[in-house]
Length: 388
Image (cartoon, rainbow, N blue to C red; front, top):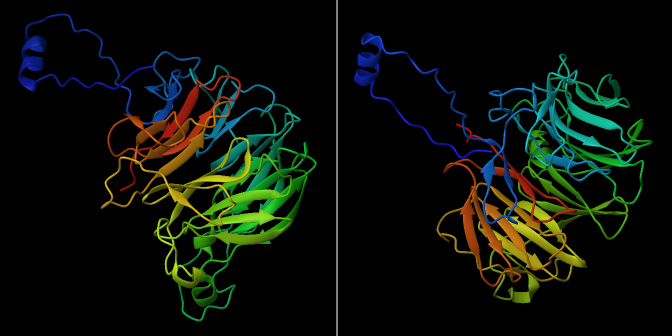
């Protein structure tokens, strides 16, 4: 694990050393920022941890990493989708990594079920959305769900919009109650349930975007994150690309709106605006409590979204946030994390006071964070280079 430091050698000095016949020290390859960062201090500090297990200089710092998933059998066994590089696996809680190829053009998400079956989602060479399945630890794969590539003009558009990308699964989660069930969400808002460890699939619900009825473009409803409830078998939170929050209960979708001003009661109970939602988490031990990250910070509800309270984070209120990830310690409900635009805000008293630390260089967003349920002092974060 290492912090990034770059020392630039002046060109003139380098030339003098070369001409003087001095023996040249082999250059040390600098590790670029990004990739995975670990904490063994409960989030008080983070260090880059991107080395591969079988190489002294290869890293995953520049990989296109997705969401973090932990093995149901071993919380120190980690899996992350890695785009064109398949997936990366860590057997030591994020200290080292091993790339594993997957027969997809780009892997967007990968999970392991409680039975040990791997499911990977992405696109194939024909740009079809694919979920592929492995029962032998990733040595062989079999496609179990195919979403055909999009066809131009396939849907009615009142106003012609942009060409929609092919439908594909972009988020998956194992069901915490049904051992052989998995959940999947697509980039155009369809929710699937996979039974028998993903061998068979059925559609559960469709989220519509605000633009879909006019332009036919459903990409705004694309799923960013699925969060199955740890309390109720039929409940789930869904965060969408157009920054909305939904609950799914018994197959019924309900949008949860957070008012712009949570401190002032709305006249006649009607709010004229709502905040943009970037992430969400259930609160440990409280079935009706949610922690939600927004483009202005974070809010909490204790009554399933009837009322909301804003957490008093030390943020610049004049700036909107582009990246917010929230988490709560599985062993201490008062330890709250809000990671906003690459800065980790940590509270040990339920959100009353906050400490902060950075992960990676400025401008690099944190896209996911995971706390080891067997040792809550150990955390892992995914950091990506900013998009241009």
